[in-house]
Structures are given as structure tokens and as C-alpha cells.
Length: 516
Image (cartoon, rainbow, N blue to C red; front, side):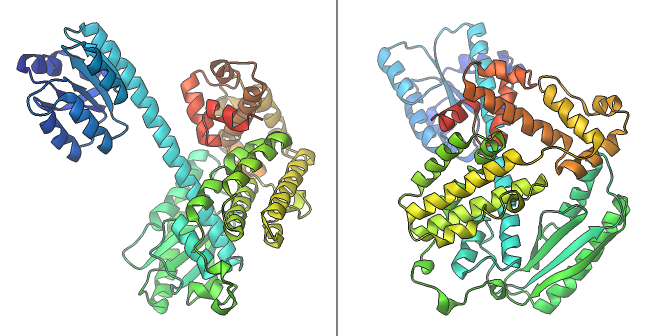
């Protein structure tokens, strides 16, 4: 239910609005009624809501003055004015304040209901977009987290400055380079459960047992490789290294016991890294840093550059080299005023998240490009011009490598299934129906598909649908609603949400971004 506040100085009208309009049927719950704008504003300062229905002329504070102050607090709130005055000056001010609707008393009940039905649809779409944006931010941070610890453990984080920027990007500023670290690898010798829901239960066990436990440490789950995962424990400031080692071993023992209880297979673990200070993993000492390396790297700029990785992956998969170069020009334009070191750091992380994205799908970008897609090329650049040339050359090499790579699976059933999915994108493909079609148990099919393709069946289906939609959008011959149906979405609004979740942009925004 969306929260609604009613502001009306006439008691009988206020009572009628609150009691005789079917708010719950419309998706709203009245959380407060007020006879004056000042009282309503005081309430809204402490109690955010979704919509306000207000009169204009009231004794102490007018509705327009309340709206002006309210938007400073809650810019996304929807306001509907219900006034006995149709004066143009009031309407003009309402337009300036971006009021959603302006209704004149006496208002027809059906008209008021229609307005709030429309408002509920707008709020629902806004809520879904916000949820998708938050999900995208969480996903990006998870990818950065994997990239950071992978680079840290392999000696690819050079300076303390770079280390601190990573922590800021991950929202882990409470960690310090003096904190101890223990890293473990966990594996199972048996076969994992087949059903996607059972696979999720394993992740649930990880999340439950790796949740923050007091003020001892923070635990991070890195990307799994087949039946292997890596878990990193970093002690919080003031944590004793010996105590942390004992704590981590006990935590891992409990985790493995829980995994053995909840899933098929026998899980084991062993220690892979142990350092008394995170600084010991950095590859440069303080006295080797140049003046430029001591500058504060622009973490916000880095995050902005990385946020486009999904869009780049779509164009790489489509083999759209012209569009790819156009998008890279856009990224380079954002970096035009940045220091060379800032640009190199941001682009290094862009390479890392793209490499991780493909690794999940069992695509080794190093192999398919013969080592050409390599962020080390960026650090050989002496200026932004040579940096730009290296960036474009590397991405073109990756685009070419993906084109000549043999797609799909060598397993007969999965290969046929992949072909079937690609030929039936416009249909509602049910997991159980597919399993029945190929006479295979749904759980086994799910496990086999992920084992062969590196992603679940639903993840694969989403990816190829969005890729097909992106290709159709660029052709410019179909409406967005028609494209939604052509790739298996009955509701264009849901298609738009999923498209934005996958690419980072809505279909309309995508068309603007890739327009050459």
C-alpha cells in the first residue's frame, strides 16, 4: 500500500475524502489527515509518504507553500491539488512545483478515483525502477568485491592509495591496511544438487554463516569455480591475529558442517592465505610511490565508468564493434579532465568486472584474445591519447575473439536445448516443460545446464532475450511494446524493468546511448 496524506481545512470535505473514497482498493492507505499545511508539513518531515492530496487556501500555511517546502524534503512525492479556485495563477504555480494533478471542486468522485489509479501505476513503476536500481548497485558492489580480493590476493593491488579507494567503493572504510587477513578455499568432492532452488539453499547457508558476528571481522564470499569457493576473513581494527585465526577456523568448521547437512556431497576447506596486515599484500612500498600516485583517486568517477560494463557486454556479445567504439568514446569523454592515473585505475576495474562477467559464463577473455584484453596495456600509456588507443584496441580484440569463439555446449542435450531456446524467444518457456521435452529430470537438467554453460537456465534465457531486444531496438523498425512480445514478455512495463536490470538503461535510454 502507498501512504497518502490528506490536507483540507473544511472538516466535512476532509472527512468525506478520508472515509468515502475506496483508498485501499486504489492501493493507498491514509496515514494522516490535517486541516492546515503547517501541521501536515511537520508530520511529513518525520514520516515520509508517497502522495499528498491537498487544498490550496488554508489559514496558517497554504497548500502551495507546503508543497514548495515539501519538495525540498521529498522530491519524489506525488501531489494532487483539490481546490475550489481555478485561478490561472494558482494553476501556473502548481505547474512550476510539478504537481501531478490539479482538480477543481466540486470534483467528480470517478475523476478523483481515475487520478489516483493513474498515480498508483506511476508509483508502482517508480518503485520497481528503484528496486532494480538498488539491485544493480548491490550487484556491481559484489562484482567489485570479487575483483578487489582477487587482485589483492594475487598481488595486483599496488599502492595504499589504490587499496583505500577500493574500500571506499565497497563501503568498507572501517577496514584498514593494518588489519589481518585469512583466506580459505572450500570445495565439495560430490555433485551439487540439481534444482535451482537447492543451489540457492547452498548460497543461503553461506550467507547465514558468513553474516557479521560482533566486532571480530568481516567475511567475504568470492566467485566459485565449479565446486570451489573462496572465503576471505578480514579482522576489524583492534582484532588480535591469533584470536582471529582461531575464530575463522571455528567459523569454517561450522559452515562446512551446515553445508554437509543441507546438501549432497562432502565439503572440505583449507587455508590459502594468511597475513598479519593487509598492507603485506600490496606490491609497492611507500617510498616507491610517485607524487602522482599519492593523489586521491576519484572513486566517484571510477564508479561511473564501471557502471557501464553491462552495456558494453551487450554490445560485445552482439559483435557490434561500431556501437562498442561509440560507447568507449563516451567513457573517454567522461575521463577527459581526469588525471592519467585516475583514468587508468577506473579502466582497470572496468576490465576486471567484464572479465569476471565472462568468466562466470566459462569464457576466458585472455584465451580468446591471445592475451590482448589485458589492463596492463593501460599502464604503458604515457598520455590520454595512447590510453584511448590501447582501450579501443583491447575491446576490439575481445569483440573479435567472441565472434570466432564456438558458442554453446559440447553436451548433446544442452546444445539442442540452447538451439531450442534461441528459436523460441517469443514463447513462455517453462522449466518443467523443457525437461519433459528432452526426457530429463528438471533438477538434473538445471545442474547440467549450469555446469555446461556457467549460468542457470533462467539467467541464460534473460541474457539472450535482452540481446535480441537490443538488436531489434537498434534496427528501429518496431515499437518497444512489440519488441517486448517478440522476446517473450507479455507486459511491456515488465520488459522495460528487466531490460534496465540487465543493461543498466531502459529501452528508450538504451536507444539514446547507442545512437551513432
